[in-house]
Image (cartoon, rainbow, N blue to C red; front, side):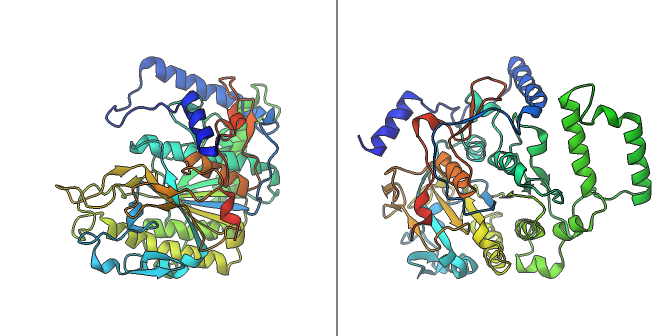
Length: 468
């Protein structure tokens, strides 16, 4: 039995059922209270999170080449055949895409000229495959690394929360930033059943810096109010709280937020000049990429950063420059920001220790455009682009047929398409985290697997990314 046959057998035995595209989600009264109970249970289990019971389904060798992760999430599903798995379609592909062979692959240099400049530092997986074609489902699936409609999917933390928890022990006393930051967050999952300490700090870039980190009355007035608060009920949120570990964990959040107030380190990392913004394209996405670099440069304990780019759902007029958020508009925001991020991380000496991942939730239909709307619709085939963190630049993994419709060569040891769970395992391995870890502190009592089905070795890191 080869690896593909073994994986197919696991999926048949442990299927991935999910709500169909046209079955819109709703929450019943029973489901609401069940979710509420899970959230409260996770809150009061916070004290078990750092030293809690864990097991390993297998002793594995991680790559451990990265210190940080930046995940550029192209929300809405970018067209793989117009970007990193480029396929020219006669009479369809616009001539100004100007495809050229760059770093051993055909690439639309006219559409993404800046990215072409850094393509030799980027490895591309062309054999990616999503599990679902509904946007909210597939988006959450990728970010939590499992089916959101499964039992543990409903309590699962974001991958970034897992990273923040795992790396908490490595923080220095002087590091004050959250372990996980999400820029331009739209429906970004939180910490699941983990303590709120490991939830993402969700924010949007502004030139003036992180919002609400000063006080209208000034620092002296703020300090006086803080001291009054501690006098009144600080003991209820302290480590010896008579109310238990829940309020104590909330007190820890208060203390963390307090350290961000009136802090010049925060101001420097989260603010930017007009010139800095212009280099990254002067857009919300570009400014978020700029701040991702600055936050890592500050070395204040952040280990996972997600930057979300919306607007990639191109069902209609995908190549029409006059039609709102078309492909030209989206790549026009992505292209300068991505190239600047790669180059600036490299010049700052951070690229070797920072894994930069680009992906959407799935791809888009191939070949001719849709008959009526001149767009591309939902499609399971997709790409993943990775740079830094020890990944071999210019590497190509997997190959699709001449239209990009399906994989003809998976390009890795498992001899099958590469799923979001495999990318989750890849992130963990790059950071030195055992992807087969099983936590025994979940409120369902089932055991929470960092990567699902670890006991059956269903998913694995794509370690070929590190092989020359």
